[in-house]
Length: 78
Image (cartoon, rainbow, N blue to C red; front, side):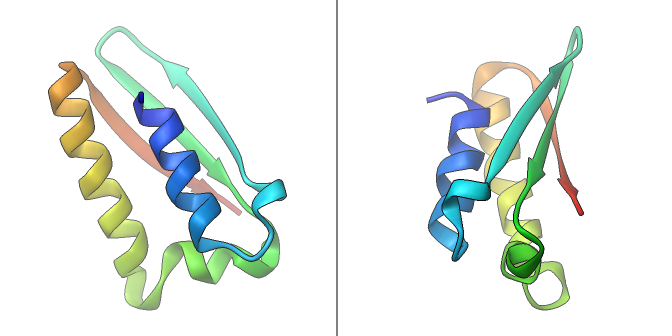
């Protein structure tokens, strides 16, 4: 499972409208940017109180990326 699939899997488990979860990846030489887009009603669930859920997603993504030898950044699109 790559980083993009992992983010998509976790996001779909968190939201009420999993069919509206869209994940895209912009790959660079050493860094990839993973863009997560969810339904407007689910935005709060993905971000969490004081950004805790989003921070946890970024920590998990960082660990997976380190194993792959790359750096990944998560962007949550409103």
